[in-house]
Length: 362
Image (tube, rainbow, N blue to C red; front, side):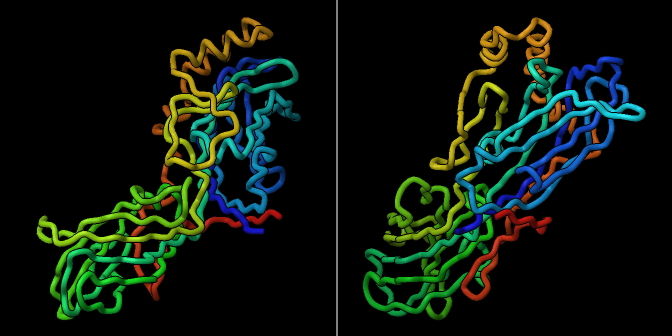
């Protein structure tokens, strides 16, 4: 069974309106577990505040053979009050991993203990699937083109011709090249759709005859066949040279990608959109406008006390306090993946991924 790999970053942890039985200025910390014992960690203690802002974050690689069962695996947080000689559980937050991998990065949930709510908990997550994706140019057929001895230079997001792969020469009218090199990407879907395929026509003496540039985002589909044929124009100095039929083949593409923008809470997803058509969807994709969000969470819960409803309403209106406070904290919001700089070596292209702690789950 093939393993699915995610690079995970959990950060921006904070809470609002925590209450203690003894003191409003409560000192708190949390303990977190990702897929039970796969990854566990604890925060530092934040003292004498009902609105703690923890600087703790976790980065790791998560591998599983059961990516189709992520709805049954959870990220769980327990919030504790720290006393002089003891600690007391204030409540818990629990989110399934499928929602983390397919929903927004920002999360906002009530802290629950028994039948009561003790404030709200906020955090951010980057949970990004990485694969060794493959792109092959199966066929390039030039139409209405004549040259005695031409070849192709081709690559992915490469402007330096020294980094382009070279085809065999073809002669005669309407030349055809088949089964060109395979390009392999250690990449995420977000990185892959930013890449561009470049194909150049050259004479044997190096004379440039024309080129075309194709955005992978425009030719990729996660919903249809893996093989696609497109009609594309080659140009030189902004003037058309010829048309071409180009067939691409993709393999081992990422299917998990987080939503762009928005927030996830106990009622669903809000103000977010898919990164790309065909990616896996969250298990309960409820979408509402910002105006509906607070009203729906509070009014559709008649069992809530007025006090608990007020906590929820205040928490939702902050719209993820963590993101607003993050710039004033010591942590930095960095992307897990730098913009890749592709290069071709031995007929393969490798986009670097970060070297992080690697844990494997069977």
